[in-house]
Amino acid sequence: MTPDSLDENEKEIDLKEVEMTRGFSVADNAKAHGVPDWKILKTVVYEVAGGGLVGVCIRGDLNVNEYKLQKYLKAELRAASPEILKKASLVQGYISPVRILETTGVDLRFVADHSIKNVKNFVTGANKFGHDYIGVNIGRDFQIDDFADLVEVRSSFKCNKCGGKLEEMKAIEAGNIFKLGTKFSEDYDVKVTDKDGKQVPVTMGCYGIGNTRLVGTIVEAQHDENGIIWPKSVAPYSVFLFTLGDDPKVIKIADKLYKDLWKKGVEVLYDDRNESAGVKFKDADLIGIPLRIVVSKRSIENGGVEIKERVVGSKGESKIIKIADVLKTVTTFIKS
Image (tube, rainbow, N blue to C red; front, side):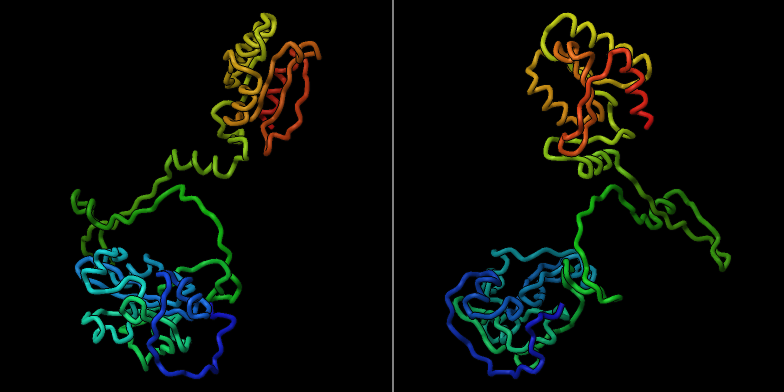
């Protein structure tokens, strides 16, 4: 994650305080000084449970991974609010470890990500509004109490093992694993004999896969712009059956198909609402049942009923099949 434009032979320049009108963000700061984002020394202040405030320094083009920071500090934390910063005499958008004690009277502890170690001549806030430091160098102009891996990893970072570029991908949490420790085994006096022959409480754990999470996972993986596309193996129904128009013959045929399919063990969702064709077709795609059967005056005139599989983009081909062949066609589809 070393910047491509980093010059390892860059010479340190003198520290200088300058007046600067700019916004609070890293991008505003970099633009105002005409430097890349990674030349900004960013400091984020956190409230640590039972430990007051701590400043975390990182390159301006990177972000702090709060989970890593929490593990490092071994305590709960949250980013300090503007009100907390003001109360602590810290100026939002201008905080840095450079001369902070003499400027503000605040003796703040600082930890940093390793990313700041090789950068020379940082730009950062001067701990007072409208003032920045340029030519800031670690060791000479400020000290860090400790360094740790605190960066939020993102796509294009190099793998520590193989050197290849990391790829960022979306994932879905479908289950959880919890370490329960010995809380419940102690409550119920559940013990085992360890290698030394002593009775010790069982260390317990549990895992769970949520049904609602699984449903969400399936929908996330199987959908298009028109709605859900249920896989046959988990679809709430196998067939979506509906009629078009109010022709008695159409309704009679659809009613019989509905009953015959259920008798064969086929789960059918029957839409017999008095709605337009557009509404019914749209709802069929939205709900995403694997197979759609439409009974209409037109389909009957063409020799039977219209059948279509729900696929991505609803571009599956519809075809007319004879009413006598519906049961065989549907059961074959379900088993395939």
